[in-house]
Image (cartoon, rainbow over all chains, first blue to last red; front, top):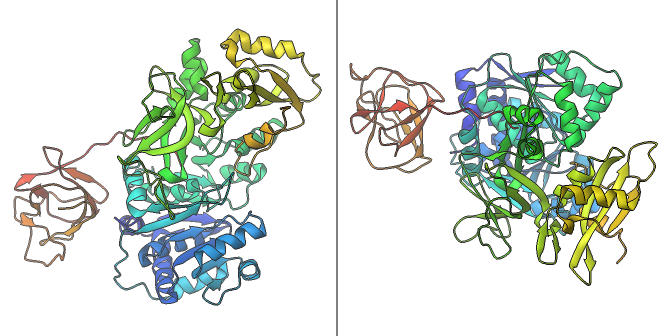
Length: 496
Length: 95
């Protein structure tokens, strides 16, 4: 099944319903489909091997995504925040391409006459005028190619096939299920898997998409009030900034907001707890997924959030920091370094399998012989099957043969009233192989607690192997733009 | 039939995508569905319950599953046995 079918179905069922709003411009499903069909004709005529987007979110992203799908050419949204040299290398890898967006920058970085560069307005204008693509054999090859953020080494080109994406959408969303008047605010950039998934699931459920191309917390709050937004997806850093601005008194009407989902980075316990108080009528959903899994593979439901917050049972309360239960349409296992299945509460690497799981890169597939994808994320399942993340598999601290989860230690450190942010990491040790080092950020005006006080806090709550040997107090911790903590950088701060 | 195959009704507008394939013949309005969709007439009188766009249809054994991508007047059946719409448990929106 081709992803363009979703847009065709939406346009068949409700051609005149508003599908997308961006910077005051509105488009119906029929208009989006017409734009995509025109774009497909342009793409087919260009003989490009990739359709690239170097631009913020707009209707052009929708025309390009579905136009590429109809033409049977991979869609490659690029991260416009990359440094010039990194972006130039990616442009070289996708030549010959039809690139939509920042023509001047693309030409200055990689000038190649095989590429067709076209600015956003010209692209959308021509797509609307172009004849619809003739019946074409679009096939079921690669729908989307996303370059992974590559915190280490060269970015990998993750391949998502039509079958991966359509399985995900059909398995998680019912067609036309969004109630009349529902509107989803999309703030994640178009090159992020959550941005792609949001377009697909919104169109399939017929939920109106409200695009906010450049996020600021004030603009986000105002747009929710103005457009009567019902659903929104945020990364934790966005939520932190939203909560901060609300704290300072900017509080437009949030009564329309039924659901906030979040993912893409670790959510601090304190922040989600605060957000639940600030949005008492809103259902929160934590979604865990990767580019290579076509977005979400596990989620913590609104009911789980409220139950965890209200519970006195420490195990249930802890679930506020969980990413929830795996989707019924996938399989999920925790395995040790040798690939052996681990039991409940044991930290290991998360493996997933299912039709939505691609696990495939342009260079090679990362799937095991029997179709499992080793995510390189570490985590564990609790007694009732709730999944907890413990950082990247490479970040797990191995002390004397015991696997320690940085996240577990950080959650305890964050309960200290003076600590606002924490990072635990493995530091080399003669005796143990690795021991625990922690970097802590203090809230304004707080004096650094005694080393022993921090160690005692961890000792009281966790096993003694988790007690930090080195403690640093720092101004701030390093994050990438999507809110991912750069642990490898913190690791270098400790004495060897 | 294989997953991803698009079948068209011979007697109405109905079109379906095969989500899960299996043995047997998918019929709409009493006539076998085909990939080319050549029309042979009208839906049979007792096969006119209609199809709904976006609904998923399964056979009694749960082996064959179809997604209706275009609605029509005929009813869906597998080897003469009517297919039923599949109920799904909705998940909270996560994107």
